[in-house]
Image (cartoon, rainbow, N blue to C red; front, side):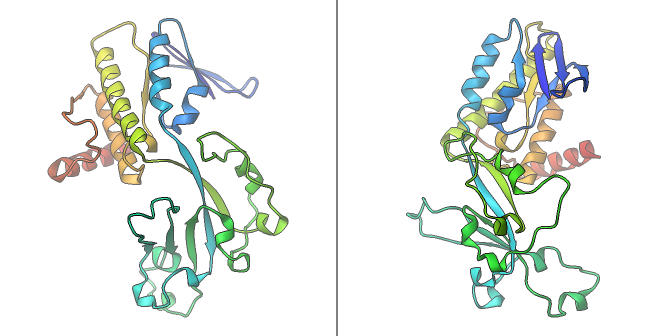
Length: 281
């Protein structure tokens, strides 16, 4: 899909020949930051906006990690009383260059509350781990991949971001690893540049919405949402960001004193959560 932008609106075109063409008043981009601009064409009168967005979105770096389904209980403490649904390794503050690691206990995460006897039936313990290298999980303890009509790891490899934020391909995978149950994730790096980009895109969204409601004729019909635009991109933060974009579209433009304050607190957070639930329904 490609989008051509002009002050008069948006033209959406599918890349596949003859697949379709649509006109719209406004476009909301919820892609990764580095994927957004290649999909957009900025028409006459929008060159300044194009340069502004290149500057903002260019600050967001990406890295990759893998999610693996397995039975390698040795990744967690031998004392199972210490296990939780989500298990994050705590390191010393100086160990900042070690990769982020989290292990989910699937038996806890997806248990059946209506059948407690089933949960205690001595089933194997299953885990889902987020790792930076597939070799961190013994292959003999990885689950097998079920065939999918969407294709396996080969299709994922083409979309893998490199450490520098650019696309690259994964190393060739042997047939044994191709058949295992894993997938690839792409994450924005939550560093100072990313926080700055989040503050700037929030100001861009607010300014763009305000100018549209003022009837300005030179406004780019483009707003941004998605995980990179707010905090760490958690589900709750994505929901809150989408609710804020809806508020902007409804004309409820607010000017925050601190644009880096990413999560409201107290009654404001509860109110926004209720509003977001209403928009989602």
